[in-house]
Length: 217
Image 1 (cartoon, rainbow, N blue to C red):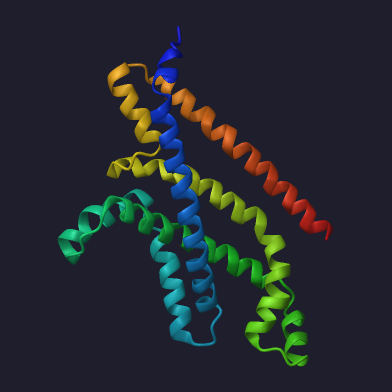
Image 2: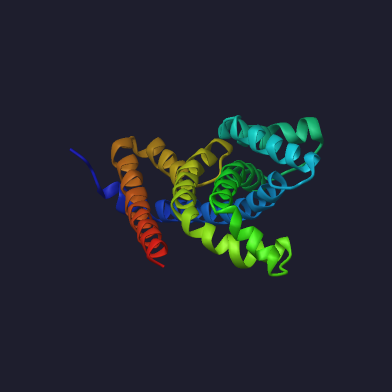
């Protein structure tokens, strides 16, 4: 029999873990989106050095597991780089750079999906490349990028569960802690799974609604 009273007794730990998970999801997704946009501009640059640098960034961070990045950021930087970094900052840096590499590819693909004639027409009207991107290209591309960006952000929230390996008290860490002294892991981890469902299912539905709205516009 499941004993749900342990969830009530330790709900403050679960709520704090949920807040921590949401905080890291939002902060790292926003930072990753900004970095991803910069990398996308490098990938589309007419300068070969910038294109190579952007491609190197994407391949470097996409092809090394996030768990390795988290451990390396927290444990290896102080040893090899002499950089004293807190576990919170290590988590933000690793998650942000990791998701930025995926966002960069999504943004690049979305921009390239817009007909090249749009950019040519913008330049014919006297717009600079930056103005054309801001006023013409990106507004159209964003509609097409909403589904993959939303999907990657949902994955990012699930990626935050790896923060527990560097003892950041996210939802999974708190679940592990509660299980360690209640010896009731099934109840605790079931609650964690339900919590993710309650948050992510509505977000997925909202993303689909935004996609449909953008398609009709």
